[in-house]
Length: 122
Picture 1 (cartoon, one colour):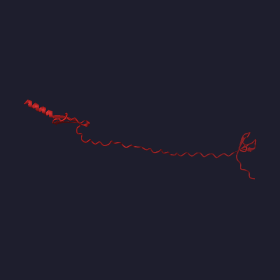
Picture 2: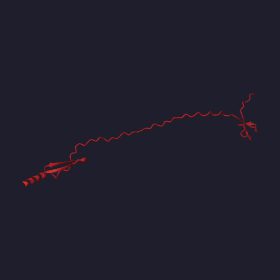
Picture 3: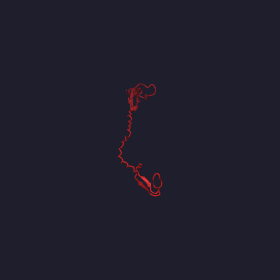
Picture 4: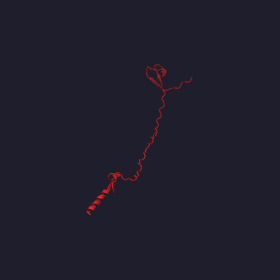
């Protein structure tokens, strides 16, 4: 009786093969195959992966372009300038030559400043 059980266990183990299918992302499928291997040993190829999960496209935030407005210049009002003094109109007389400037360019003595006088009417 022990011999028969031993033979049956050996037959079952011979006909039964174990298979481990490797899958991506770290998952493994373990299964038991009952039957005689036809070629080679148990199947070690990739298992059923199923549909791939959906990954949405990468999100890139929009580029923000900050446009600076041109500088604003405010013209400051200038303080009112003091009025220019009235031009001083003088004639310059040379006593040595008895003539006025610009008729005489050089005077051997000092120039005398004389107030202008209107021409005499004759």
